[in-house]
Image (cartoon, rainbow, N blue to C red; front, side):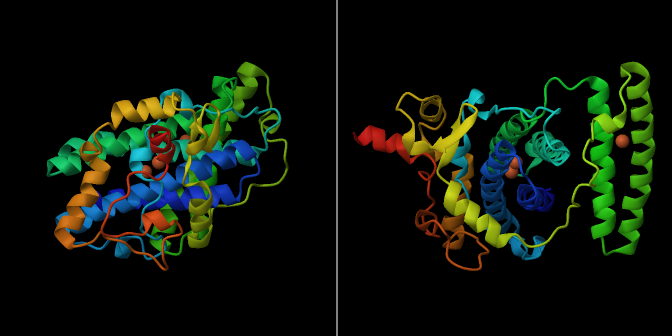
Length: 328
Ligand SMILES: [Fe+2]
Ligand SMILES: [Fe+2]
Ligand SMILES: [Fe+2]
């Protein structure tokens, strides 16, 4: 269960990084870069649980493709619900690649959320169950954020065509990227099934709404395929530039710019009044107690100095504005 979790977080990170580098819509891009750091932090928290409870090094599981170190600390990811809802795309003017990206990432976050919510209760100890439960709710925030990017005026049949198109695109991408022949056949088989679904959905779109599927895809170019690889440098750059951001209505801002009575700080004070009780940080304190320092896999020092200490868990980066206000 925990090893699968490591894979989910690695996928969330790598897929987000790949999609962000293919995204031309600024709102979508901001959303991707914003949530990227949060899944990056989750990977670190779960990897510490894995090391502590099973003595397994997660760097072997991630194939050394993804660094394992803190991102935006999970404690700073708890936001008031309205700060997770963003401006939506307009399907009449958005590039098809942007519509595709918002659908793919919504589905990935949704699957991750469901996995954690369904399995959180089955983890073998209390601090692990709490960690899964806390992070499941951050994934819920990610689902809400990404889902809000999608055009809410899209009809049911347009949405259906788009879903089938997304599935066909993903299987086609995996087919091209897969090096194992046996697994490649599975992607191929599923690709053909999705093509059949897509044809059925487009015929119903024409029959009931009188629309051609080409109306939904005005650009003749086939979107760039997903190709997995290393994104370490991109991710480091995003950490350095966005770690202190939080949601601010439909936008993002440095948390230090928020007024004391902002939704974010009020929510933080209510939820995280007692830092000792936050499971995502409790797990690191336990790991430090047991192992002498936290578990990490990094190529070079952390780009954010405050997150570099392996013997002391940081709970302030990303919400430091709250303490600045308190000092004043
Ligand atoms: Fe995550
Ligand atoms: Fe996520
Ligand atoms: Fe399908």
